Length: 324
Image (cartoon, rainbow, N blue to C red; front, side, top):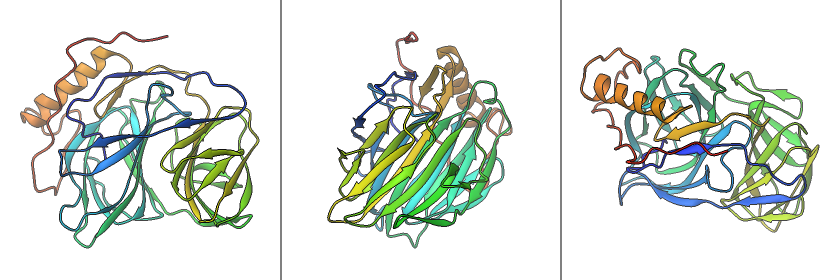
């Protein structure tokens, strides 16, 4: 899914200093997408206390949701300056984008869309999907690469065994496995399934900061309890993460990377570097796509979606000044 808030707030996202030791808990906020009957997601990034984990800048975690009466139906909408990382635990989503890609997001399979200079896509749960459960994440593309032409990739990682846990590395490298999916800064993304009453020592890159999102189970990271649906954040410097479970099995998402060391501006589904750039992206979307001035313009066109594209929300009335 993408950000369907009707009144999104413009955010200036910065790397936030953190203590070298200990786990910082990032609790989710509930965000309804598309009205009172639509899905509600748990958003852990960005938030006031922390905007970024490496280049990871957006984490929506949703489900398990019954979608038999009303499934996911997200019309074509734009993105700039980011990669969308779609990862499911249950259900199927049909993806179409303006690169010409037509794919199905399925559990255990990465769908990675690089927006670059500009792309649009749609997301629709398939008719046979009864339950939808997963995560939508974004990574910010560094300034030097963010104007690349958009493209789409799919990757089904193998399941690795580590001290009784199962690990699927979908981005970057971990436990000696390297994902072939494209990244623009040093990153890691993995699903980790840990049996009940188990402790594992997970070797990680000390140059990275890390976040552990708890989907199911009772979990501690480095002896700190991390509530379900929250992220346990660990600053740079750790060579090992100690992950332990309680009486039930746990499913986790591990994200991490080298600090981005850049200031980014996020609004709706755009990432830029200034307020003026966001205004220009919105104007191009509204004129070229919504008003129909140029169907093959900045964002291209999505073929095969049986409906109209999503208009952009109204911009904030106040221009925000960068912090820091």
